[in-house]
Image 1: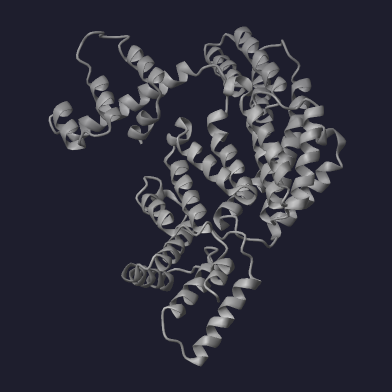
Image 2: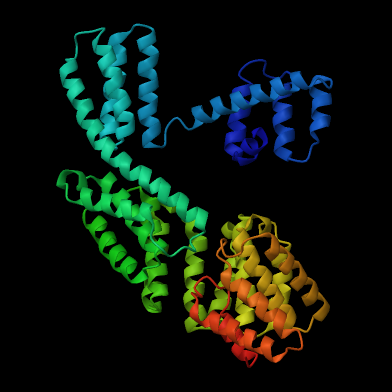
Length: 477
C-alpha cells in the first residue's frame, strides 16, 4: 500500500514531505527519504532495499516502512488542512477535542461553535451530529450552554439525518447492483421499487424536499433508476427539468460542481440514445463550458466524456468527422495520462474501422488494443465482446488459422464461464453462428443457423460493440 500512496503523490506533495522529514536532523543521511525516493522510482527490488537499509532484517525494514507511511499521512494532512468544507469542520472539531482533554473548556466551546457554524453552512448533518454530542458533553463541565436546547437541536438533526441516511443506504445498494450487473440488467427489482417509494414519500415532505442535500440525493436516485431501466426518454425529460430547476434555485457551486458535470454528461447521452443528435451536441458544448468553470477544476475528469459524446453523435451523422475527433482525442495530453482512456480510444477506432468495412485498419488498431496497458483492467464482459470482435475481423481479412485458434479459445472460455450472467448472451449466439459458418452444414444445421440469426433480431442489441445483424447481412445471411 505504501508504494501506491507514494506513486499517487504529486511533486509538490513529495517536496513538502521531504521538508517535513528534514525538520529534525537536517543534512544527515536519512533512510526514510532514501526509501521514499527508491519506492517512487518504482523499479528497485524489495530485497535490495531491505539489505541496504536494515542489513537484511525484515522486521527492522518493515518498521521503517510503517514509520514512513505514518509520516506521509501526517504531511498530507498538514498540506491539505484546508480546501474542503469537511476538512474545515474537522479541523475545528479536532481542536475542540484537544482543548477538552486539557480541560480548557472555554476554548473547547469556541472551536465547537466554529465547527457548528461551518457544519450548518455546508449542511453536513453527519458531522453536525458529532458536534452536538460534544457540546452536550461539554455542558456537563460548564454552565455556558443549556443542554436542553442542545438536546433538542440534536434530536431534530437526527430526524433529518435518519431520512437522508435511508436514501443513502438505498442508493448504496442500488449502485452496488448496477456495478455488479455492469449496467446490462433491464428489469426492476425490490431495491429499485423501494427507492422509488422512498423518494415518493420524501417528496411530499416540503421541508425535507427543499433541502439541497436531499434534492441532490433524489436526483442521484431517480437518474440511476432510469439508467438501470434504460428509460432514456424519461431520463431526458427528468434531467432537463431538474437541471433547469437547480440552476434557477442557484444550487450549483464549487463543492457540487462534479454533480453538475455529471448531469450534463447524462443528458448528452440521453439525447443521443433518443436519436436527438443536434440536441446532444448542443448539450456537449454546455458541458465544455461547465468544464472550464472554477479554473478548469474538473476539466481533466470530464474531457474524455466530452470527446466521447462528440464521437458517438458524429459516428451517426458524419463518420469522417467522428474519425477526426477520435484521432484528436488520442493526442490529448490529459487523456493520454489515463491508460483506460487510451484503451477505450483504441477500441473506438477499431469499431469505427469495422463499421466502415476497412478491416485491415481495424486489425491494426485491434492489435494495439490487445497489448495496451489498460486492456487487462477492462470488465470481463467487455473483454468477451472484444474477443468476438477480433473473431469477426479475422474472418474478414482471411486469417483462417488465427480465426480457428481464436474460436477454440473462446469456446473454451464459454464452457468455463456463464456468459449470460455477464451480459454476453448475444456474444454466445454469435459465437455459435460463426462456428456454423466455418463448416459444411447439413440441412438441420442450416435450420439451427437460421434460428440463431433470428434470435439475434429479437434480443436487445444496445450493448453490442457493432451491429451483429448488419454484419451478417453484409455476409448475405
